[in-house]
Length: 139
Image 1 (tube, one colour):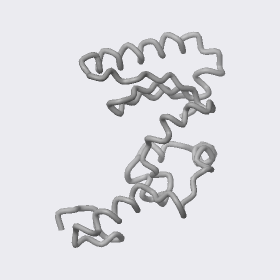
Image 2 (spheres, helix red, strand yellow):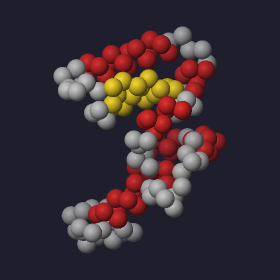
Image 3 (cartoon, one colour):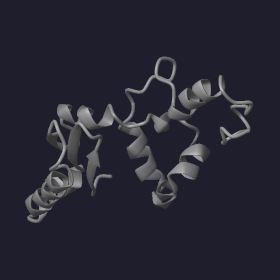
Image 4 (spheres, one colour):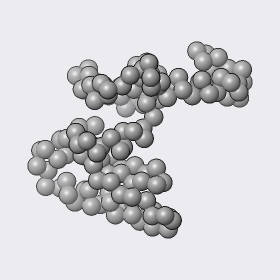
């Protein structure tokens, strides 16, 4: 994620988030990439009412929490579950995984359940599936 730019849309907000390396390396193409992402989002949302708010964010800035607060907290899932849902994590070295997990050091599993735990607490009331065995609500 350090070398990435993430473009996200939650319908009311548009996000362009830059990883540290895209900014700190003095990348001359950074501003061009950001403007391209911004244009993509604005074109995609031009017919919405009300118009979504655009946020240009950089890793490490306090306002980047606007994006991270909207992410499903899958960092609380077991490593096996994370790899099953996000296979790209398997391409990271051990050091890169440690650095990525360090970004979520504020996570408190006692007060903020992982997305999987939350989902199964809700789905468990309407399904015969068991949390530890099922992945389908159709059981």
